[in-house]
Image 1: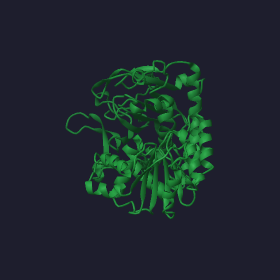
Image 2: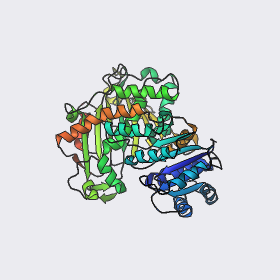
Image 3: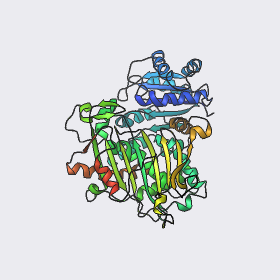
Image 4: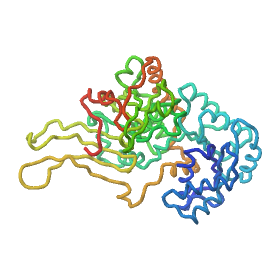
Length: 483
């Protein structure tokens, strides 16, 4: 249970609110973690009233796991709706009066909108003094398109909400597997002594999707895979793998160590971008067993150079990780929907086994974030039975759902209540955002200056062949979990 709160979702009829935020709040409600006096207020430009908005939410929640009609109706009593335009005055007086009815409540303003509206919304919240008291603001990614625009947004938000009130959300950090990485590294004597360039050969981080851009085409074409996934989600995962042990789990202790990693990333620019990055764009193909159109066909624009796939060879210039490459890849219309981190350890220095016993494979620690969260440690063992010694590569497999007998909560369930509690540990600090853009910006600039189109790849494949060459010219291959 947390203190009573009002949670206001700007963009309350949008995809994120409907698909993630409202179901997450419902699941926290049925677990008894939301006080009865709390209110959830959807904000959008559509001219709905409370009842019509509740009907939309009712329909959405009826499709979720754990749906219960009586509990849904109880939850809907806490739901409100107000029609507002961030750039118009109409309705703001009434909205401010609604929030002011319960001044003792914690106030959370979740900006699930285009980043271009962050400044307008925060300006109006400040004008009506809704930033005072126990108020917080949640900023969805991406924050800006580059370092300059990110600074402009952060400056404007910072004039209304101070840094302690500002929560820059990355839902990947709320996933159980990411947090379990902290427990694995720092709660077991087995791993941390090996967590360095003397024992780790390389690291792979993959975030792949089978879907195309769908109804996000217009947004996606302005962003692309590097802005949409690499600059935020994937870099945050890299930080969690590579950071030094923090002195504690205090919010700034963890975030200070992540910042050091971001500041240690080797520079990629026009001098080396062709050797260290690959960008692609999907063409028509077969995905999920069905024929699908290409990106340009979906967009209706044959000239777009927006990348839907990125592979990067990143390196961290510090003592722990010198010489250890981090291979990053993400893309749309790939064969599988999977997010995972693979830590590949160095091979044994000398094999005592005969050639007919089989090959010695590298030990790998695989942390699966989705779809089935869990951890696998791949080991070499002897195949049981009489006769000659035969080697097998098998996993010690721990599925969270099987090990604990419960399905894992959605990351937003944890993160939303962390905002209410005022715990910023799993949220990005402003200097982290700036450091990420300082690394990503020159890559985007180099791609733009080259004038080259992204490499084509068929929907349903693992991206352009150049992405395979990126890792194989180093004598390595992209990991498949079944190996």
